[in-house]
Length: 225
Image (cartoon, rainbow, N blue to C red; front, side, top):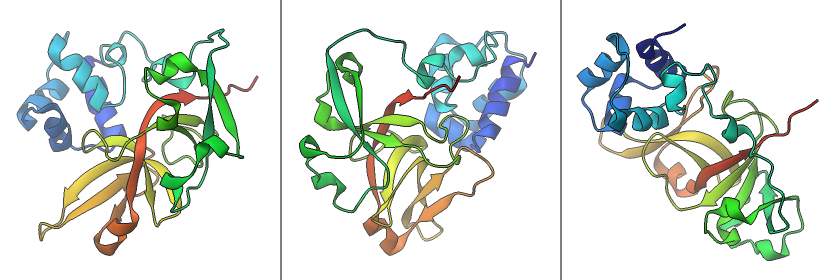
């Protein structure tokens, strides 16, 4: 069975993250991250275990070797809840440039009913459901998954997964990184989890056609029998 440090290193590499990127997100120096990856650590400090798992898009239990499942089962499909108090959320595929102004109360497309408790106190108007296409975010998100997105204008930190719009009419889930080129100009790098796909940089005038839709809060996956 892989050791704690091996799991940390392997998970970082599978996500395409550098040691410096992990260090920046944790607020640590690169030497500390190297120590997490290369020393025989029987247990991580409690104050770093959960933040590190969050950065590596996994669970504390996986990093510690208590499970071989890198993702919590609850992310795949919520536990069944028997309730009549549900809300209907619109399922969006490709988004038009005028997405923000759509009147979802008059939505005529696909929708999904979810228990109101999953909104965590937010209004239903703050959510949409994005239907996943392709396998660029495999294995975390798979073809046909429906992801409940909390609408917000920015990602919580560089390297977080976000639903974004670019080229005005394309919507996608990607790891969103805020970067600067050699001239100091800011740009956005959209990076897939699946290493078979290259990242895409949004620069210059293309930034005028880019925007954050929101962040994923719940994943709905139908399991075929």
